[in-house]
Length: 292
Image 1: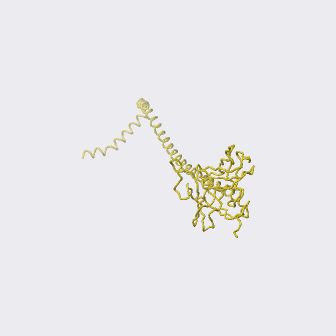
Image 2 (image 1 turned 120 degrees about the vertical axis):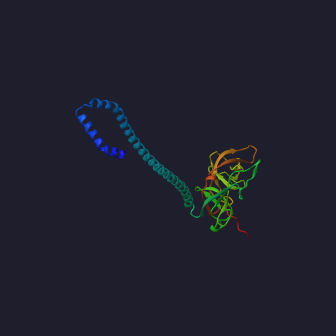
Image 3 (image 1 turned 30 degrees about the vertical axis):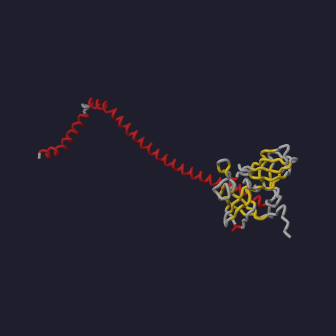
């Protein structure tokens, strides 16, 4: 009962005290006390103001950081998309360059028949995986590629295969219904009748176990120069005349030998060949005489 009575008097008490303090303030009796309180409370007020300002600045900084992070994430997505697009355009550009070379070769030989093909496999021999033993390790050099045309497309064993225009890759060694194995000219079992572009000296380009080429049976009296371009001679009719094989990188000549030789650097890196043309029909330089 007493507690309830005391609480009912609180509003009236606060009202009276407020009126009393207001009257004392107006009469400036409390001025020394107010100045003292201002001295004491001013630093606290400034600190509170600075704290509120810092909290506001911090909140704004956090908001700006979030916006910057979102912007950075957006820019990273754009950069990734542009990078992918750039890679795709470079692939298109490389493909266009190859196709232009092949198209130029086709236009330069209008009487021949061609069949375009993509390289879909590479191996060291015709029945991969395998390799000839050289010393104690299998030979790792590329000797065959697989293209995505076969018997159903009119491909037959022995047909020449070119790339990059007039660069000879090899000849078809095995055909399936929709794919074919192409024996590269660097295979040790490959041999191509060839001639030097400058001196017109003839010989036989043979693949080597180390993946290089060697031109054999060059007459001793013929001039062979480093850098000379080696072309197919067309002799024998297996290949058209004038296909590029490579360049002479070294001349091997012995005084008492019947013939000289030349080390040939291939005209193309066969590991990078992607597009090819199969020459399905051409006019041979030399044709076999029909049997009686």
